[in-house]
Image (tube, rainbow, N blue to C red; front, side, top):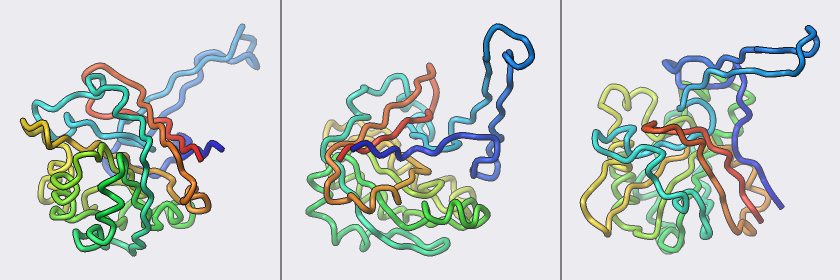
Length: 228
């Protein structure tokens, strides 16, 4: 069974408040007598379900086109539930209880319940989402060499209030490139519909999250699909 985890894009999509809006433009329309239907879109790389590459917060970090394609294919996915309310933090202590499971995973999917909020309260989803503490990010980065990525059911790994005020330390902790073969960057997938996995969480075999690559870009939209 295939389960699509990506958000369908449109001009009213929930997004980080300072991001530009999506825009859809019809170029040709058969209803107007044109030979075909054709369109263009204006898309912000950080709207909708997307992946942050190291370049997003690392001056010399890899851009999305320089990351090996196998880093977007996961054969040992782990979904954990950490229910969090508005602006609550995912802490190191929250994660330690899953240490044995995380050590075997190549992608960690963190379900907080905020993917359920998106359709009910867009304002809360955009401005009051949970986030990681800096210590939690460092814990994942330095203790799990098999881990390649994290996937989140909210808009940003950093706090909607403290992130911008403090320079987005969680993103930097996860993405900053270190010259050590034992410490890899962790790709960050944000705005993922993890609620769709809850009914099959014990049977997930594979997750594919392949990006649309734009040369030298710091992020990319993804089509994220779980296979059970």
